[in-house]
Image 1: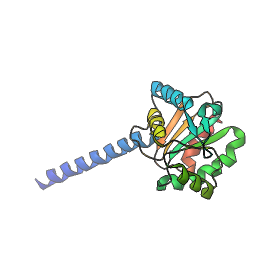
Image 2: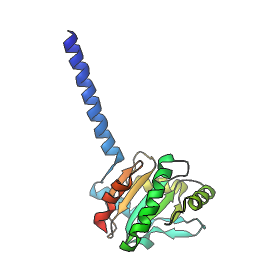
Image 3: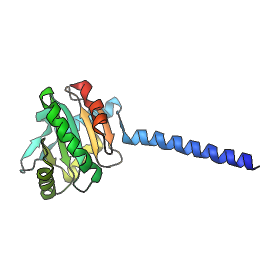
Image 4: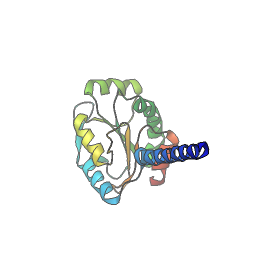
Amino acid sequence: MRLKQALLYLGVAVFAIAAGFFARSLLMGGSLDAETAQKGAQTIFAASLPDLQGNNQPISQWRGKVLVVNFWATWCEPCRKEIPEFIKLQEQFRNQGLLFVGVALDKKEKVVAYSKEAGINYPVLVGEWDAIELAKAAGNRQGGLPFTVVIDRSGKITSIHLGGISRADMEVMFKPLL
């Protein structure tokens, strides 16, 4: 009797662990179906958001580059952790056509202060509530941060990632597109 009970508990535990890994893979990154990717990219390129000086910047101005659009906030610790790596990657791959674009879901004053403090070397836009809708259109069903979208030179979303991302994983997402 105890053996059957132990095997049942073990089976349930293995199932729960497998389900957790499956759910994590769905939530944390990957690709979108073609229709969602196309609509998401169209929505992103149709957007125009204010930069740190308050000037509206159409995201479409960067079409033709490999874009890494990162949705973040100053209060988000995983966001703050990955931004220094994004700064290094932007510096390293800028001349190969890579462009990071930060889209902050935060108050402009806080974003300006943090951007200066961190030395962000790529465009930062302030989206507040508009940015949440952009992220959802690009596949962020959970509404979590950070959320990163990679768009190829032809304007297609090639991958998305919810949560903090390492430099190595980020490079895997964009390097083949350069």
